[in-house]
Length: 212
Image 1 (tube, rainbow, N blue to C red):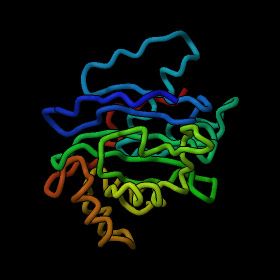
Image 2: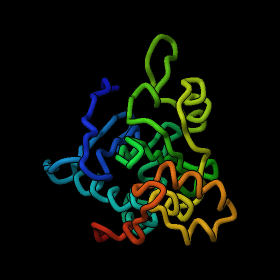
Image 3: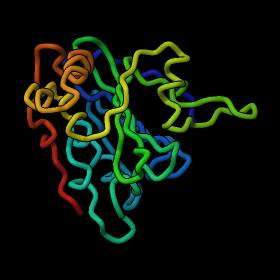
Image 4: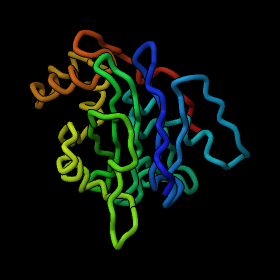
């Protein structure tokens, strides 16, 4: 595992700072791309450039099946990006209330992603633990317990992309239609890109990358 590297979070406006993939499409590795300033992603064919770029619209609430086709070795979004218990995609982003993380991992059903929000900037210690004297990636099912032990503010698990989109975009219409409307309203005020007053409807379509 790589050591954590601090990233400046002094964005002038709310937005995505960086994407961190832990044990995701490349097993047992941590990959990262910084997006808070001009990002230049280079590499040879097959090095994962498009794979990382596809995650940008996913942060804003794009439907997972729109990002990965069932072609060749790429099965579902969940099986491709989140194949293992320790597989996670972490979006560090800035809000009017400060830096946060949106964390995506494999749902217990195994058929879709699950989502949580963390009221902190990214730190690898929040996603790892010591076992047999070594630092290892923590299993996603233990995230809530782990963060509680560290006294970190965080959300409960969200089970659908619609509820996640309602929070990240601050979409009041989606919040109102949810059977968890009260909880989502509180999460939206704390974790949405626009804070308690702003909203970003349809931002999940921003920068959409065609399926290939």
